[in-house]
Length: 333
Figure 1 (cartoon, rainbow, N blue to C red):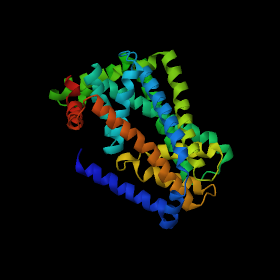
Figure 2: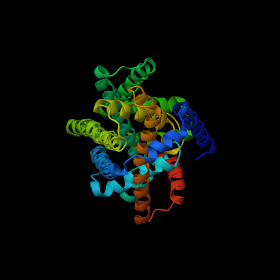
Figure 3: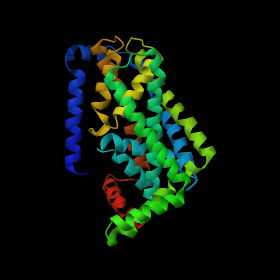
Figure 4: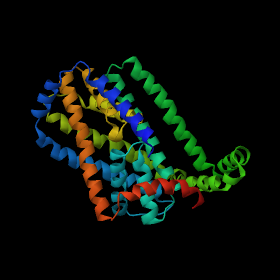
């Protein structure tokens, strides 16, 4: 990864951390963290991995038109990818996941990246749905209303474009073929065309009504299960807000992870989580302590399990650098 990406992410994370923690007494935040009942983290972590299994199930449906891969083989690959997002900048885990899938299952990197982009679009749509569901019960500040409108247009538009591409492959091929032939130098046209053709393979699942229905069903279930993690961690901190508030928090903080930041979404997740809870009269120090522990609960276990799967699958850290090179070679095979 280029160093400038890392430093830009670190600066953004520090800005968000400052905005989230500004005016709070850090010693009181620490007291709230220290006094929490951490027994609740045990079921929280177990429930979180149920959500991860659900993500693997969804990915299985997205990949099935390309290659039917059992969920038990996909699960370690997905977890390693999530670990990569937690320790590398710029969502590098997505590229790592694609690289390992090519190595293990002979699925092209460009097709896999297409399925991962579709995942992210569905996740964005669900996060916006969570925000909309919470609207009748929660006052929404102007800045959040603007985020919802912009996000709705962006994710809804992207989903519509991907459906059009998937359902009209001949038209899509003519369009991007014309653009490639008229806008790119001769020497790169065929490699880029090859990358685009394989990328289109990753959209095959969107042609099947059954697969699309399953993806639409699984995606909200994944995030509802993950919001249960928020509820379980909350029990250890001795405060209570309605479940729809946690749905709102889940929607906002996960939309915030699309903002470039340091590995693991430090700062962007935390600052907005604190602000949402403060908006519902949770004391700032308690909101900060809870959000930081929640973030650690979502970050640490899957990072450790991902490291274990790396060891079990005999994947070295040096192969992460190879993933970047493989992306650059993906267009030529």
